[in-house]
Amino acid sequence: MEVEAGTLPLRRAVLRLTAPFSMLGVPTISLPTATPDVGVQLVGRHGEDDRLLGLGLAWEAGA
Image (cartoon, rainbow, N blue to C red; front, side, top):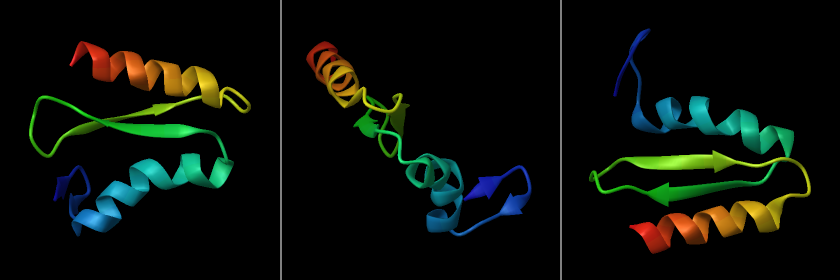
């Protein structure tokens, strides 16, 4: 995968974008988009899991 710093293996490129949120322990949800191989990750505040899941459901309903 091409990134600003050069070429990285796909797993490493993805983890550099998603791992910080996992390490913080905040709720996240990954959703597909209409573009193949592209998704979007939503990040919520601590304790707002239900709100984040509601946004995910709304995203899917609109897709």
